[in-house]
Image 1: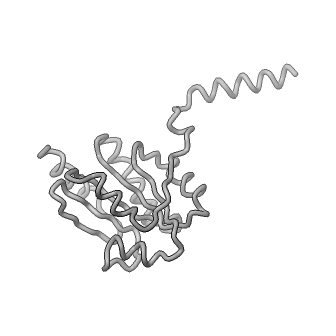
Image 2: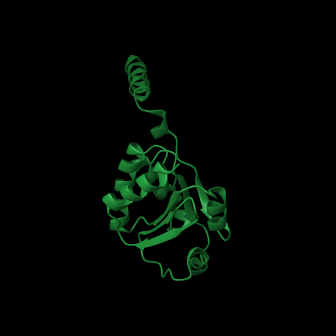
Length: 165
C-alpha cells in the first residue's frame, strides 16, 4: 500500500510539471461540405494559413515541424490545419498534432468519404497532392502551394502580412 501511495504521489508530482496544453487533446472538427467556406468566412479580412496534411505524408510532418517553429516565433499567426485522413483516424491525428503542439491552430479532419468533393470545394485545380498550403492575405488574395514550402518564404509572407496591420 505504501508503494502504491508513493507511486501515485510521484505521478501527480510529475504531471504538475507538464504544461496543461500538452495534457488536453486538441479539438478536431469534422471537415465536411461547407467547412472550407466556414474557415474562410471566420477570417474575413485577416491573413491566415490553411494547411492540408496527412499522417502518411513525410513532407507534411516536416512542414508541421516548421509551422510549430513559426507559431512559437509569431504567436499571432492564424493557422488552420486540415488532415486529409479519415474521421476514424482522429485519435492518430490528435496524437500527431499533440506532438507538434501548434498552439491555438484550428484542427480539422476529413469527415466525408467523397474526398474529391471536399477538395473540389477548396480548389477546383487541387488533385490531392500533399502537403497543400494556402496563404490568405488580409485583402483576400490566395496563394496555393503544393509540396513542402520553405520556412524562409513562409516567414517573409508572415512579415508582409502582419507588418501592415
